[in-house]
Image (cartoon, rainbow, N blue to C red; front, side):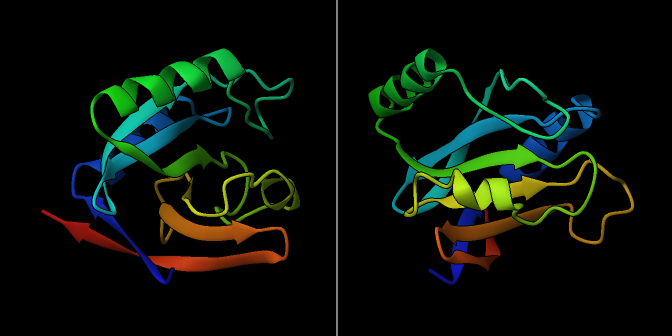
Length: 136
């Protein structure tokens, strides 16, 4: 995977979520059809230290997956923010990348960030940045 296709309304939606949660990591799932991300499903971060980590409660994760499957969508990505630091995968992000076939979006809420929304393919051996292809 060298790129990920995203409906043009998704990036502003997840960036807004990150900016509203300014001091802690936001998180959520991304779903769509035919390889194009068309929907963002914000989730509640239940991590012990939400300033530097994210975790979606298993019950919420299952509820969100049921919700988008009922709508005929498939999970294509996961997003979270890095409110303090670069929006690239941390060692923890790499360690907890349990879904190697989805794109991981990492958002910087900083208005001065050169690329506030970035996407990556992450597996246990490391990561590769993906080009975000915006589709109308």
